Length: 66
Length: 334
Image 1 (tube, rainbow over the protein chains, first blue to last red):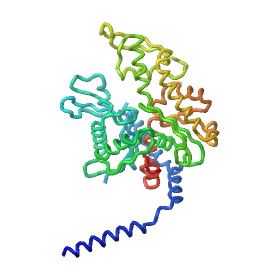
Image 2 (image 1 turned 180 degrees about the horizontal axis):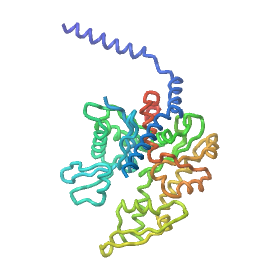
Image 3 (image 1 turned 45 degrees about the horizontal axis):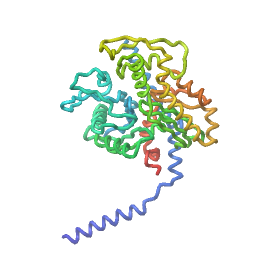
Image 4 (image 1 turned 180 degrees about the vertical axis):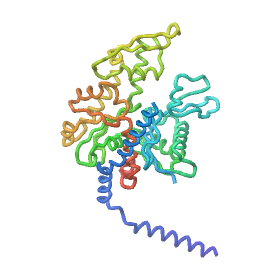
């Protein structure tokens, strides 16, 4: 039983090592492009609008309460 | 599954942004503890109201100074309570992006990430405050142009030149608006012989403090304890004397801005004359500070539309686009 177990562990280890070696490296140009795109004003608009809307909403609520 | 979070763990205030929801918490970075049992009695605004007004067995403390953790255990407890308040439990561990001053040491960085992980974060990444502030202030940092941001917080002041999504030059000093409060406290003690608390000093700064002479200046009545008699006493402070009391702190902030400008590449320097510099952070709200920096650098200074929220907004944007922007985390660019 034990030899089979050792063989199974070795096979799993080999698969993991091979998978790591053949894993495609992230293209630095593509990664830089994606970062710059994510920083564009268009990409940032939803985050900023979301917070502005929430602030306006809470401002209106406060006015109603007063 | 917990929603991922962005935290602006400031010396003065802590803000939390939740992915898809926006800013869900904005409270002073203060915790009140029972000195004898070590139990947490209050956090945030409630604890802030206790500063300087507690009986002997309660202590209300700010666990961060100069943007760095001074008491690891208390900070961890404060973060844990904050995370609980925004719905993080033992079974829902979110990814967390935390904004920290760029000048913190490797040890201080590890203290922040360890505190966040122990408090319930599955993954804790750090981002420099000026970078987050530039994103949150909506500056065009995706373009190859010079964007300059000055972030004046409670314990640190940082100036950065940012272009194409990266920091080009940076200057940070561990001086902030708490040092202005301390300078006012010292002045009142030395010149008027009365002791005032941290909160009173802050109120004086807000009421009559300024970095440069401004129009419609008023005097302020200050109440404290006479150091000689021990009795309550009232004195009148003028804007001029407050200005001279805080001059050292203000000059050191302005000097760091000038150093950052002088380190910037000439191609980007010319952009500042057209685009100006952007002021963010609570310390930037000091009256006359923008005018003072503008006068000394001869570069236009503009106030951000969201000076207090810019940093957490920027970190919030990073958490919204985590995969695309994870290369901006501290340590990821090495």
